[in-house]
Image (tube, rainbow, N blue to C red; front, side, top):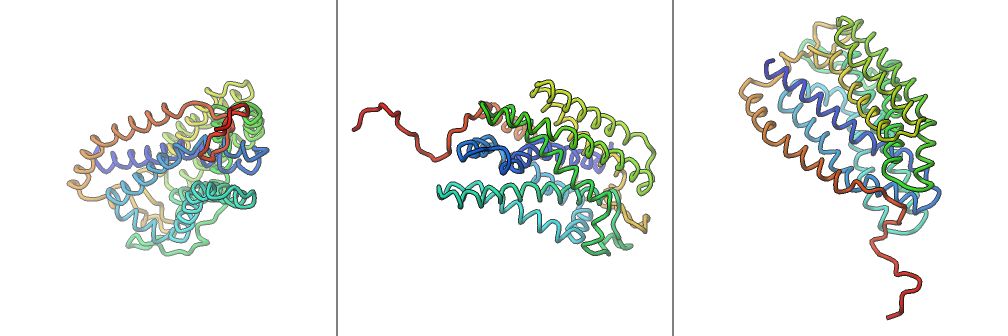
Length: 348
């Protein structure tokens, strides 16, 4: 495997890690307006992702940085062609980040309601746009002979790409509901189980339909044979089905594992269907960007490989340790930064 192919695989792995980890906290955000019955439960939901959401976004930063360094032509074409979509993602990310911090600035119900909806809207918006954007890489966008985007914003919307956005929203909401069954207790945990069961069938249906359509698009638009993309697609569909079965059986740990595997398989299906191209041109297929014509020089890729071999294990170990430290379930105590004294505590 040459270094260009290696970095294509590594970027796919980074996107997979991002969607598995950030996917469940997007899902928690989307469920904020619907699951909790009071502010204490809403605070518990925020607390369930509070220690980890910013660490999960590191995967996006690394994926973006790796794409810029390893495939500058791909990076440049995406940013010029998907500029408005990426600005919207940045806006939703900022709104979502601010919601975590500003929500605690006041105990006013109206104030907190605004930032709860900001987090929910940002989470759903990011999932929708990522699904549409990544699907466009495979479906194809107008590129000229220089590899530059030659279309407009509305070229990004087709039946397939819109289904991709909807699939990401449903799959992340399902993933987040399962995550809450592992991180909460009491009535909130039971309502999370009911939400996971409610989301299971539409998530499997939409996710499975998206994976099947991805295979058809790969064959029609990217000159691919059925194999190898059919392998991760089959794994993804099977994993989502097993996640749904485990949800109904009350096996939350297995359900979360299968949901994560299904998410990874979805990313693997997209990138397997895309290779050896990184961005399909449509209708002028000859203008497509490939791993070879979009990659950096060999020396750049070699230096990046050495740095990644040193740093990536450290990042993985640190993030694993973070999840171990914050593994306890949350019980719905409000995040006020203060601890109430017991009712029978003597006055001082």
